[in-house]
Image (tube, rainbow, N blue to C red; front, side, top):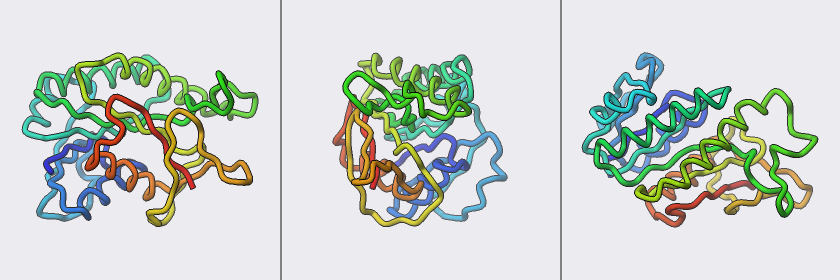
Length: 209
């Protein structure tokens, strides 16, 4: 499949890039700093771009069958500017399928209570979590696109690829001890699985051990 990964040099984006290439997909990686992509693969094309620039983005992604976006921002206005650019860019390019790396903060931990709104949620992460939540709320209103948002576990860490995890929808997935975690490589497995199988179109899902 011909896909574009935006933010392919980041913590999650790099794992998504590696997983997609391992599965044989033809990948265009769009990053602000192309020199950060050190992978050499005949099926990889690296392009410099800014997700907030919808017109330029449309040119860069044209011909892709799907776009996977892995960007973040520490404040809501910046995040919303970026997700607007993403959506307008894929529309201009005539692409319907878009998968977005979202945050865990908007997952429910009890009926009507989201992780972000619990007293234990770390103050230093509230900015980026609030931004991701607002972006998700807006994305789910874009009914002309076949979008998917994937929230990670509460704790996502640099770790190995096991391929073994549990999926959920709008509720935080935890283990018997109440922990919610997943490695960035297994997160990538779950999201590239979704890219290939289309099991959560116009929906959000999550994954954790």
